[in-house]
Length: 168
Image (cartoon, rainbow, N blue to C red; front, side, top):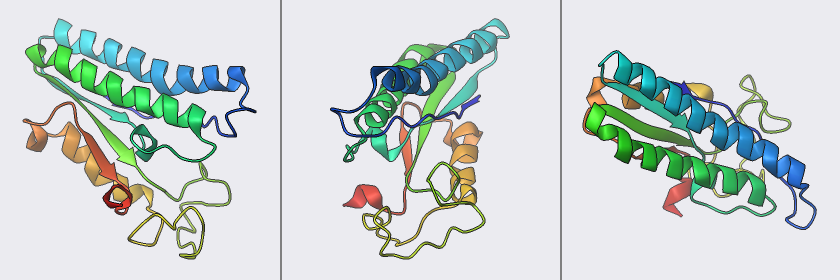
């Protein structure tokens, strides 16, 4: 199971509408929680071990200016991942997450997969040691690894795919 949905509730703390925060929590946290729960019940009912891979974010670990709503929701994804991993291990179900950094998709205004090469001076890329935005293909191997038997002894982890952002 891959839980891959996201909603961005950004803006200054003092201006963030509570309805926007609730929407981010509903999509980013409740969606992961329910998806994990449904997939785990199915795996347990079939008596089959399995893997759940959630989509977290660098925001699961790093606070960003004017991102408190999004950061809070992705921090919660980290804890849903780790708590679920702890509880589901006895059933042979592994739960991990991929934590993307700046990925060139329409999720970032003005970016797209077709045009990932942004100038290194772009404010969004300044904290990225590799100096470029990632592309979806950069994430694919991480998801495949965590879902595969190659990761049979990995659970409760966040795999950062962020161009080195976490190194800083």
